[in-house]
Length: 112
Length: 112
Image (cartoon, rainbow over all chains, first blue to last red; front, top):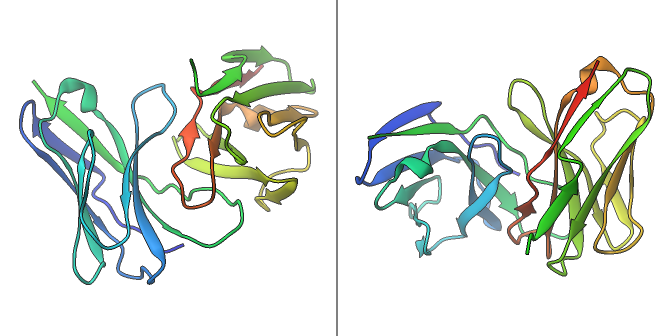
């Protein structure tokens, strides 16, 4: 699985859009971009994933650049409960049962 | 209903003891995982288990052994506990490799 690079921390004002960047310049054609988050003292929570196209669900939007070397997770209206560590993970679609490789993530702090 | 449940939530025990952590998922998933999160908050895969295929992270000591009585359960047995085993252990499950993983709330293991 390709390596990812994320800023260690970010701040965002409550009610504003939080944009979390991720670089994955070595991503290969069959690898997906996944985003998870971990709120303090809880297990990681899946947010969204995508291959090439932009994706949106009830939690967030995922924007993947055309060359697929970077992506941005967008939380459209951040709330205090969105304060968490956000992990960008690149993962292939092949078979097998190996787990996720978590990096250090981005600690997003939502300010009131 | 809780999708992935772990018991116990907290486990405090003495060095040298043998202990088990249980994990159950009611999502009908085929693959289950164990992760360890150390004091520095790094999340690392320990094991994944799919259709009787066990994939072991090579860095995991053989004192740790997963046991799966059926597809919905993957328990973690730890022999001769050491101080360095103190961590939070997370169980997770997914349908197949490139599908989102669902995590439990973790078991906080403290070795005295």
